[in-house]
Length: 472
Image 1 (cartoon, rainbow, N blue to C red):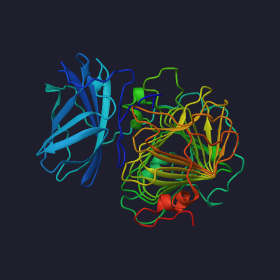
Image 2 (image 1 turned 90 degrees about the horizontal axis):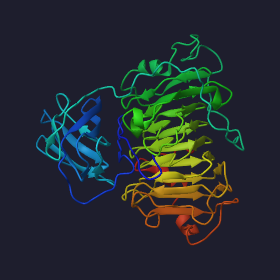
Image 3 (image 1 turned 90 degrees about the vertical axis):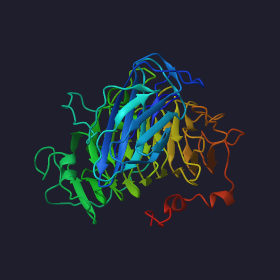
Image 4 (image 1 turned 135 degrees about the vertical axis):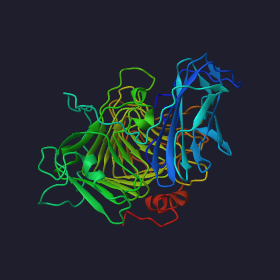
């Protein structure tokens, strides 16, 4: 995500999101396009799919747009769309305008996404049009996660970051026997993905994939039809097992295609390992997003995990509830973001850019009570009085920093800021009983009362309709 907009489309699992390229002014009326290209990518499962649609304007700049396409099968439906307004009549679908930027400059692109259902088959839609002009270059893929490139000679070297103030114990792991994954060939598989691929679809019991210390340069996907998978690092610390890649939004189809790990199967767990995107920002303000973990899985638990990146490190999509315990997250801009529900408990959160930026960019739906809770955690950064607690990617964003230590990196006078026309004052942003040099109370720092805070505990955030309680 750039400092003012987000680009990309979700492709794996249950969710998608979107953005326009930065620097394009909006205007209220649509103009005709003289050419366009569309890339359409899906991830299918029995009876359903998630689609990512990237639209490139090959003609003159347009201010306001409508994309039209036709499903070839009458059983195909758009169930839920994100970041554009979708409507369907029979087999014909229209999508209108990215939520917060309706303009597309010449040669610029926007990306939209949706969940769908189908019966029979799910081929590529026909007759894409942009403002009534037929688009060219349509492509389709049933496997949107690209194959990992050959490992570069350099190894990941994230910016220096502080050591957590405590060393949480990793989840129990086997002490003997052959590991499931070992890059040196001493395990059952050499890559994490090959071990996941070996798990039968529709499994109904926990499958623990143990990973020997090492660096695994690959893109990893736990698919939606493989729940109850645990990735367990066998090292003495999470730094001993590193899953890393360096894709980024500008070269890989948008923010949500850029992730190193896509975790979609419900009840997934990650323990005692690192997920990293080591793409390094080049100073541009466009298409620099590079996600480490794209989480669609509901009831996911992360324990003693490091998530390393620059922009947009950790995406929690709308379908996800996740409990993140005794872990470490670092980045530069909006590096904890999305529309899902997350509790970060006893975590270290580090802003590594010297000029600072917002930590969170929540897009909580208005119907959801709970978005992000940062609970009894530690927030630090490389410079003082530069870092913001967050900004609202969506107008109803919900974020609470509760009983946490806010270091001097936090902007004392104004720790919340606006985003894409969404006012932080209208969002559901709160603090409660924080401490540290970056904690204070003023008119720009809404505080929860004791009575309000009783309804915003970690357990209440995560309970949902099924009473999920991973905390114990």
